[in-house]
Amino acid sequence: MKNIIAMIGAAAVALTLSVPGAFAAEEMAAQPTHFPMEEPVEQDWSFAGPFGKYDKGQLQRGLKVYTEVCSACHSLKRVAFRNLEELGYSEEQVKSFAAQYDIEDGPNADGEMFTRPGLPADHFPGPYANEEQAKAANNGAVPPDFSLIAKARGVERGFPQFIFDIFTQYQQGGPDYIHALLTGFGQEPPAHLAVPEGLHYNPYFGAGVALAMAQPLYGEDVTYDDGTPSTLDQEARDVAAFLMWAAEPSLAERKEMGFRVMIFLVVFSIFLYIAKKQVWSRVEH
Image (cartoon, rainbow, N blue to C red; front, side):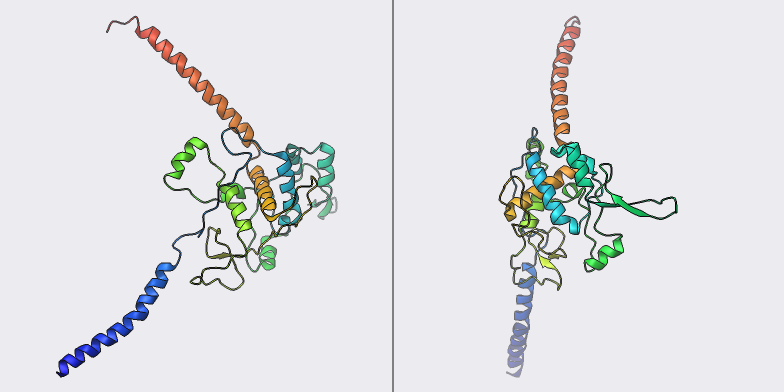
């Protein structure tokens, strides 16, 4: 009898101990196993597809968002002011735009560095003098350079999407990701997620639970010269398109050249087939 009571007591203790363990296991299973927690929504871009081209009006709006908002933290060191002529600006407009920046130059005849107004040949100056200054101003995190961000960031599309991407020429993962990230702030994290202090939750962030960058765009951050309403979605789309241009300014020319090459290969293959028929027609089989 005593043995039976002992066995029942041991089973009860085991059951009691297993219940928290079950809850803990369930909670662990609820933790995300990959990031981002939400996939970016595929957007409709003017430069999408095999015949896509940049919308210069959109690029000009994106430049305005970058210069008035993003440039406070992020550099664009691989883009020269003279490249802005590709956005539809005249040579005089580019000179005037570049002159608004102070560029460090030198040394002069006395061996000292000095500052001067920017020239079209200069590149966009960064907001910080060095990496250590950038860390000190951003709680130890260095804001990434935006020159190639649209090609360096993006969510991989698994099977079978990447198969269809071969035929649709989908290559907008970077702009889609940037747009989703910029519009994804302000959401409450799931109850099982612990967001570290000083970080900001964004379900579209691809490298962890949260990121150091606070919400940069809220809508009405800039006033567009063409009268376009500056909503949050519009600003995010415009700056994402601009960053795509900054990363690949020759995108339209590349697509045009690729189309010409494909036409050449088709015609060349037809001539090869005709030549093969002519040569082998004189050979007895």
